[in-house]
Image (cartoon, rainbow, N blue to C red; front, side, top):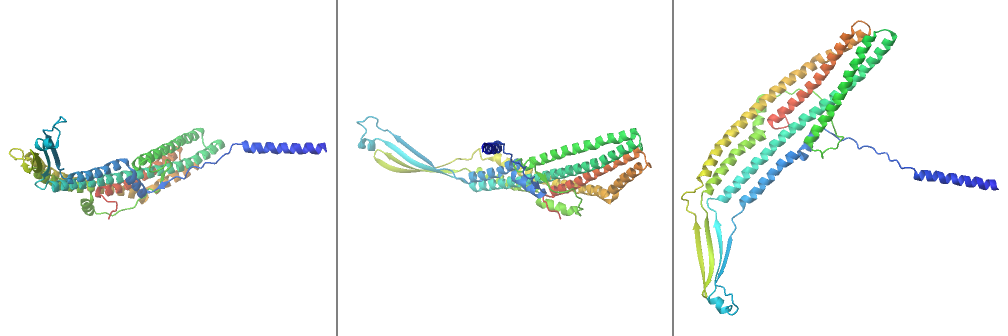
Length: 430
C-alpha cells in the first residue's frame, strides 16, 4: 500500500515538473522575412513619377504659379476714411447741441479704377507663366523617366553579370577538382595544378565584384524611385535582351518637334514674353481714383465727390515696356536654340542606337558561340594532353571577356533605345 502511494506521488511530481518545464520554456516564433517586391520597368517609372522628391518639389511650382493667378485676378480694395474734428473733451461741453453745431466729421470711401485692362493682362500673363511651368515639369518627368530606365538597365546588367560569374565560378571549380584528382594521380604536374587553382581566385573575385555592383545599382535606382516607395529587399523583373528596332530619323525628328516638353516650354515662353509686354503697356496707363465723402459741419450735412489721376509726364513705364519688348526677342532665340538642341539630341541618339545595334548584332551573329566553342575545345584538348595549360587558361579568359562584353553590349543597346525615347519626348516609338 505504501509502495503504491509512493509510486503515485512520484508520478505526480514528474508530471508537475514536465508541465513547469513546458510553461517556463521560451516561446519561439519563426519569423519569416517578407517576400521581396519585384517591379518591372513600367512600374519603376510610375513609382518614380509618384514618389521622387525632386519631381514633387518641381510640381509644387505649378501650384505656386496657380496661386499667382489668384493674385493677378484680385481687384484693388476700396479705401474707407473717417475723421472727426473739434470734439469736446470736457463733460459740460459734451452735449448734443454742441456736437451738432461745433463738431465736424467726414465719412468717405474711395476706389481705384484700373485702366488699360490691367487685370486682364495680369491674368493672361499669370496663366501663360503657369503653362510654361507645367511644361517644364513635364520635361523634368522626361528626364526622370530616362534616368530610371537607364538605372533599371544597370540593375539588369549587374544581375546578369552576377549570374554569369556564379556559373563560371561553379564550372571552373569543377575543373579545379578534376585537376586536383589528376595531380594526385600523377597526370599533371604540381605547377600546372597550382596555376589552375590560383586562377580560381579571379572567378571568386568576379563574383564578389558583381555582388557589390548589384547592391550599388539597386541603391542608385531606389534613390530615383524614393526610398519610401520600395522596401529594402526589392528586386527588378526583366532580362537583357536585343530587340532590333527599325526607325526612321526623319520620323523621330518630327515626333520630337511635336512632343519634346523643353521645346514646348520654349515656344510657350515666347507667348509668355508677349503677355508680359502687354502687361507692361497696360501698367503704363494711369489708374483713376474716385471718392465719395459725407461731411457734417456746423449742423449742415453735405456730400462731396472727388476724382484723381496721375499725369504721366515722365513715368509712363517706358523702361519696363522696352525691357519686355526685348525679352520677346530673347524668348524667340531661346526657342530656336531649343529646336537646335532637339535636332542634335535626336541625331545623336539615333546614331548611338545604330552603333549599339551593330555591336549587339555582331555578338548575336556568332562571335558569342565561337568564344564558347573555343573554350570548350581548349578544355577538352587540355584534359587529354593535346593542348597546353596556357592555351586553356587563355581560352577561358577570352570566353569570360566575350561574355561580359556581350552583356555590356546588350545594356548599351537598351540604354540607347531609352536615349531615343528621351530625345523624342515619348515612350512609344514608331
